Image (cartoon, rainbow, N blue to C red):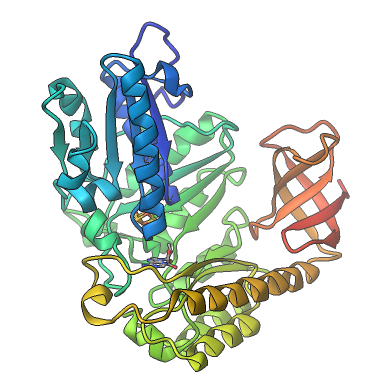
Length: 451
Ligand code: 5AD
Ligand code: SF4
């Protein structure tokens, strides 16, 4: 059987990995650990005993990068304390800043260069930092079994594709992660099966734009696989294995995907569908390739086929040239859709993107923050409203563990991804419980047992 948990052999040199950014990065760190374990390393949680310290980084907003510069200074303290400590920056920021980072650390490796980490580590010397930031059109790490670093052993992430071919004008990802490529579906199903055989109860299929997943079979066109078909293949592994996915793109999410979700009870009824703005003018400038009406139609379609589907989103406040009316359009769309939850950001100009070249970052910081705060406040009310609609409903919850506030209670997620809290009868993480929603907050459904 493939080894999926960390090796704890005390005689091995230790690697410490910090992960920033998205879930894809979490999964990439698991791929990195797999590669380094094969090269003789073992994972540690304790930076004080690490001989290799890695940060898997994110460039999506300037403040993400600023945090990492701060961490590099702290990593350097470890170098002063012990001989032979190697510091590496990997991931999106390594790709974006390349030589600039090489002045500060020993190893710089981009998202497609993880296989070369053992060689880079071998070659590194005090005055000889090492770098590999080559992007690839083929690399999907399909043959590497990620070593799972999660604690609960219940919920695992599987990358189904890498890179991104969209050209959203604000976004750095196509530059840091390169062109889109889909991974062989049979290796994806195998990875999900291995997780299930190891006690996992939930897999999340990950991609920048899962709807454009497409596997072209080298020999027979009837063996091509699109995202809806991939979802079905994974759902068929077992009705006991929940399947989630992220992220969907409003321009690409197909009716076939929506109907496939409806057909399988174990495909969770949740779609993360980033809208970014409610203004068609802003959406055009963002190069999202849909407008407000298109987005609202997709939401109507989802809800007509899957009435209880959870829908969450991402919103950007204060993109270039955003007027008071554009901002109002975002607020009114949020009120119309009533998202379950949202990730909300102030626009942060990223050097090298289309927006940084064509559109001035002209909304003053104070106004951006004011708009963002209005968006956050509105979403709080919408989350509460969306949760209130759940009162009286019966839900099947996958237990994640004891509730943080009260050890006599359990917490876990419903199919819609909403967090539920309910009395324990001694179940453990990975068990399913039937509950009824009694009352709610904007973040949680408080439930009673009905099983
Ligand atoms: N500024 C602010 N938010 C951004 N996002 C992506 N790029 C930027 C940027 N330059 C947000 C989008 C995306 C999420 C992952 O991050 O909302 O969906
Ligand atoms: Fe993930 Fe984007 Fe951050 Fe890269 S830049 S880690 S793809 S969120």
